[in-house]
Length: 419
Image (cartoon, rainbow, N blue to C red):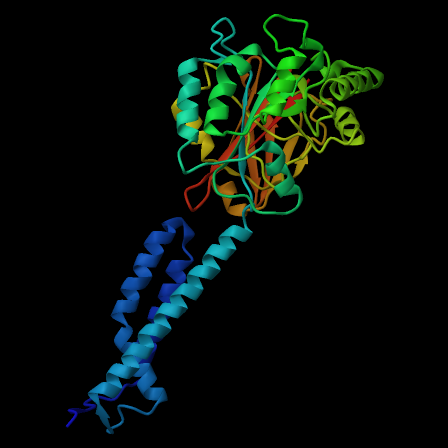
């Protein structure tokens, strides 16, 4: 015969109240994001192990067990098994809600774009990386944790509301220095790393240290994407509207003659742009345009002033490279000033965050030709406002904002001003 058990106690209000309190505690601690999701889940599992018997009793009340009736051991075990599955599915459902909520409050896509100029040219340390640095970068990127994708694929995915893989990386090179062909490209080609070369057409065939059109055509045939970088590489913000048009049209005509097409991507010389130039880039049907300011591309980024992390001898060490590679985008909107060409000095700077919680630990730094610019940061829920304590110097000024989200990811937003 199957052994039987008689309930020797009757569940009452104490057990039910205990169950209710413990359930509320679990919900409360799961929502404490600052405590960390792993700690919250650990505590939840601990609480579940404590009140598992209360849940069984709760079931016994509903099913009228434990009121003096005879209940088989198998029946009790059956109910216990059901309660375990109930807990497991409830926990999975709650975790899904937490993760979905976290994603909804942040950007969907993130892509880090690196920018090089020269390779192994010690004479120009501000625009060149050492051979050792470059090799370290390639070794790091060829690990399986990164997804190396062409720039055009990255921007097309964002434009079309697609989804990029984790740790997406893009590589770009400006100015068509000969060291790209002699040093960098053979390694990129061997490792199957996609690269976009931004070419200022006026330098081709005119300088010994630059590529010629035969070189450009060869690179293009081997898989290098070619982007536009103006004709004479001027400070385009200082040009008149007609002079800007001349730069773009002259470059387009030469590209059409020499490689049979006009590039879809544009990179501003020195990373300098203003609203007039941006409107021209749009009018001439470039898909996107890149600056030279630090930051991670995402769906809230200005497609005609996309960030890139510049690499040189000073800022090309492996530790920094590795840290940047794992950064995520920061959802920023309603950014002011609207024009990066500063007309009011010091400028009023402000923006809003998709994820309001990032405001709790966001840090913003501003640098001009004199170094760091002292400032105060004000936080109004999701709104961030920055007040500078002095005027910024003439030339380029960069803003970098970083914050760590509750999952431990660093998020980075940056832009550049021109005065």
